[in-house]
Length: 173
View: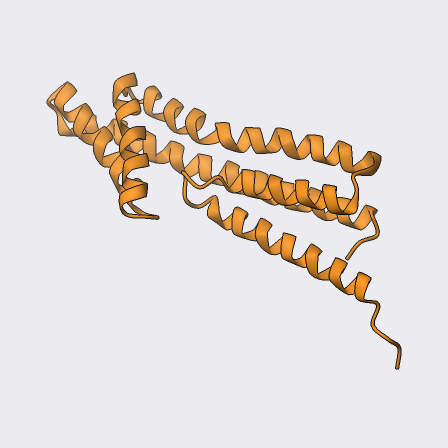
């Protein structure tokens, strides 16, 4: 029976904990307001600080930073673009965003998911006096929301895989 190398054990456990944090960030991307990309990025940053960056680490971390920014932009760009494509007004989108934020804080985690499209539907109904037109615009927002989730979740998976390559390259875990 060989003795336990406590340094290797703690290194393995800390890497496992960071993976768990990254998975929380990944599944947090389901909720549009949750900064899951930032959570994954911060876990990678902590790994880099603790385990060392090295050349490969700096390159991967730079890519992770760009992916985190892309995740942050995906919501706003895709949701807003699809709604605008269907005829939404800028103030309707802005009010939907505010309603989404308020709804998320009042009824986490689903309050924002309900409040944002409902607000856009109401704004566009009052704007057009036509529920069909308002619903068409709201469906555009919802389609954009769906696509933004797919993009954010996919980029989150890519971030975790890149981090895994970094861990492997460092000979960790």
